[in-house]
Image (cartoon, rainbow, N blue to C red; front, side, top):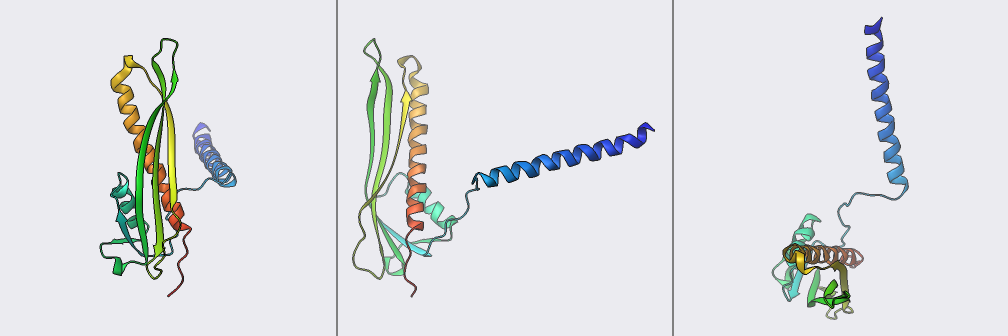
Length: 175
Protein backbone atom coordinates (compact mmCIF):
# COMPACT_ATOMS: atom_id res chain seq x y z
CA UNK A 1 0.00 0.00 0.00
CA UNK A 2 2.88 2.39 0.72
CA UNK A 3 4.49 1.66 -2.66
CA UNK A 4 1.29 2.86 -4.31
CA UNK A 5 1.40 6.25 -2.49
CA UNK A 6 4.99 7.17 -3.43
CA UNK A 7 4.43 7.69 -7.19
CA UNK A 8 1.36 9.85 -6.62
CA UNK A 9 3.23 11.92 -4.00
CA UNK A 10 6.09 12.53 -6.49
CA UNK A 11 3.59 13.45 -9.18
CA UNK A 12 1.86 15.86 -6.78
CA UNK A 13 5.17 17.57 -5.91
CA UNK A 14 6.12 17.81 -9.59
CA UNK A 15 2.80 19.43 -10.46
CA UNK A 16 3.13 21.79 -7.52
CA UNK A 17 6.60 22.92 -8.68
CA UNK A 18 5.37 23.31 -12.26
CA UNK A 19 2.45 25.42 -10.98
CA UNK A 20 4.81 27.67 -9.02
CA UNK A 21 6.99 28.16 -12.08
CA UNK A 22 3.99 29.07 -14.23
CA UNK A 23 2.64 31.51 -11.63
CA UNK A 24 6.10 33.13 -11.26
CA UNK A 25 6.37 33.51 -15.04
CA UNK A 26 2.97 35.13 -15.24
CA UNK A 27 3.75 37.55 -12.42
CA UNK A 28 7.08 38.55 -13.99
CA UNK A 29 5.53 39.14 -17.41
CA UNK A 30 2.60 41.05 -15.87
CA UNK A 31 4.95 43.54 -14.17
CA UNK A 32 6.71 44.27 -17.49
CA UNK A 33 9.88 42.24 -16.87
CA UNK A 34 11.58 41.34 -20.11
CA UNK A 35 14.95 39.80 -20.89
CA UNK A 36 17.27 42.08 -22.82
CA UNK A 37 17.01 41.17 -26.43
CA UNK A 38 18.42 42.53 -29.62
CA UNK A 39 17.92 46.19 -30.41
CA UNK A 40 15.78 47.00 -33.44
CA UNK A 41 18.16 49.20 -35.41
CA UNK A 42 17.14 50.68 -38.78
CA UNK A 43 20.62 50.34 -40.28
CA UNK A 44 23.10 47.53 -40.93
CA UNK A 45 26.33 49.51 -41.38
CA UNK A 46 27.74 52.31 -39.24
CA UNK A 47 30.89 54.39 -39.46
CA UNK A 48 32.27 55.69 -36.15
CA UNK A 49 34.58 58.70 -36.14
CA UNK A 50 35.97 61.13 -33.63
CA UNK A 51 37.69 60.32 -30.38
CA UNK A 52 38.26 56.73 -29.35
CA UNK A 53 36.41 56.37 -26.07
CA UNK A 54 36.89 53.98 -23.19
CA UNK A 55 33.56 52.38 -24.17
CA UNK A 56 34.32 52.16 -27.93
CA UNK A 57 35.29 48.49 -27.86
CA UNK A 58 32.15 47.45 -25.93
CA UNK A 59 29.95 49.57 -28.22
CA UNK A 60 31.39 47.91 -31.33
CA UNK A 61 30.76 44.46 -29.82
CA UNK A 62 27.21 45.42 -28.91
CA UNK A 63 26.51 46.78 -32.40
CA UNK A 64 27.89 43.63 -34.00
CA UNK A 65 25.78 41.49 -31.65
CA UNK A 66 22.76 43.43 -32.92
CA UNK A 67 23.61 42.72 -36.56
CA UNK A 68 25.29 46.04 -37.36
CA UNK A 69 28.67 46.05 -39.06
CA UNK A 70 31.11 48.77 -38.00
CA UNK A 71 32.75 49.78 -41.28
CA UNK A 72 36.13 51.45 -41.72
CA UNK A 73 35.14 53.55 -44.75
CA UNK A 74 32.42 56.20 -44.46
CA UNK A 75 31.35 55.46 -48.07
CA UNK A 76 30.12 52.01 -46.96
CA UNK A 77 28.01 53.27 -44.03
CA UNK A 78 24.29 53.94 -43.73
CA UNK A 79 24.73 55.91 -40.50
CA UNK A 80 27.59 58.06 -39.28
CA UNK A 81 28.34 58.40 -35.56
CA UNK A 82 30.81 60.98 -34.33
CA UNK A 83 32.07 61.03 -30.77
CA UNK A 84 32.81 64.57 -29.66
CA UNK A 85 33.77 64.39 -25.98
CA UNK A 86 34.16 61.96 -23.12
CA UNK A 87 34.37 63.36 -19.61
CA UNK A 88 34.82 61.78 -16.21
CA UNK A 89 34.56 63.66 -12.97
CA UNK A 90 35.14 62.89 -9.31
CA UNK A 91 34.09 65.40 -6.72
CA UNK A 92 33.72 65.44 -2.98
CA UNK A 93 30.15 64.86 -1.90
CA UNK A 94 30.57 65.02 1.86
CA UNK A 95 33.21 65.56 4.54
CA UNK A 96 33.10 63.95 7.98
CA UNK A 97 33.42 65.73 11.31
CA UNK A 98 37.16 65.04 11.29
CA UNK A 99 37.58 67.03 8.06
CA UNK A 100 38.24 63.93 5.92
CA UNK A 101 36.32 62.99 2.79
CA UNK A 102 33.58 60.48 3.56
CA UNK A 103 31.77 60.35 0.22
CA UNK A 104 32.54 61.02 -3.46
CA UNK A 105 30.35 61.57 -6.51
CA UNK A 106 31.54 60.10 -9.82
CA UNK A 107 30.15 61.10 -13.20
CA UNK A 108 30.70 59.95 -16.77
CA UNK A 109 29.48 61.77 -19.86
CA UNK A 110 29.75 61.25 -23.62
CA UNK A 111 28.68 63.72 -26.31
CA UNK A 112 28.01 62.57 -29.85
CA UNK A 113 26.08 63.32 -33.00
CA UNK A 114 24.73 61.27 -35.87
CA UNK A 115 23.70 61.67 -39.47
CA UNK A 116 22.49 59.49 -42.28
CA UNK A 117 25.26 58.84 -44.78
CA UNK A 118 23.05 60.40 -47.48
CA UNK A 119 22.56 63.60 -45.46
CA UNK A 120 25.37 66.20 -45.36
CA UNK A 121 24.01 67.76 -42.15
CA UNK A 122 24.74 66.39 -38.68
CA UNK A 123 21.96 66.02 -36.13
CA UNK A 124 21.94 67.81 -32.80
CA UNK A 125 24.69 67.04 -30.32
CA UNK A 126 23.40 64.53 -27.79
CA UNK A 127 24.81 63.62 -24.40
CA UNK A 128 24.51 60.44 -22.38
CA UNK A 129 25.60 60.45 -18.79
CA UNK A 130 25.73 58.34 -15.68
CA UNK A 131 26.63 59.07 -12.08
CA UNK A 132 27.31 57.16 -8.89
CA UNK A 133 28.03 58.06 -5.28
CA UNK A 134 30.27 55.98 -3.04
CA UNK A 135 31.46 56.18 0.53
CA UNK A 136 35.16 56.58 1.18
CA UNK A 137 37.50 55.66 3.99
CA UNK A 138 41.29 56.04 4.21
CA UNK A 139 41.31 52.84 6.28
CA UNK A 140 40.10 50.87 3.25
CA UNK A 141 42.09 52.65 0.55
CA UNK A 142 42.74 49.71 -1.82
CA UNK A 143 39.18 48.40 -1.59
CA UNK A 144 37.73 51.83 -2.30
CA UNK A 145 40.07 52.30 -5.27
CA UNK A 146 38.80 48.99 -6.72
CA UNK A 147 35.21 50.06 -6.03
CA UNK A 148 35.80 53.34 -7.90
CA UNK A 149 37.16 51.47 -10.94
CA UNK A 150 34.18 49.10 -10.87
CA UNK A 151 31.69 51.97 -10.59
CA UNK A 152 33.34 53.79 -13.49
CA UNK A 153 33.11 50.65 -15.62
CA UNK A 154 29.42 50.27 -14.72
CA UNK A 155 28.76 53.90 -15.67
CA UNK A 156 30.46 53.39 -19.05
CA UNK A 157 28.29 50.32 -19.70
CA UNK A 158 25.15 52.25 -18.70
CA UNK A 159 26.12 55.10 -21.04
CA UNK A 160 26.79 52.63 -23.85
CA UNK A 161 23.35 51.03 -23.39
CA UNK A 162 21.73 54.49 -23.42
CA UNK A 163 23.63 55.39 -26.59
CA UNK A 164 22.42 52.14 -28.17
CA UNK A 165 18.81 53.01 -27.18
CA UNK A 166 19.21 56.39 -28.84
CA UNK A 167 20.56 54.73 -32.00
CA UNK A 168 17.50 52.48 -31.91
CA UNK A 169 15.29 55.59 -32.06
CA UNK A 170 16.89 56.71 -35.34
CA UNK A 171 14.73 55.77 -38.32
CA UNK A 172 16.55 56.02 -41.62
CA UNK A 173 14.52 56.54 -44.81
CA UNK A 174 14.23 53.49 -47.02
CA UNK A 175 16.46 53.65 -50.09
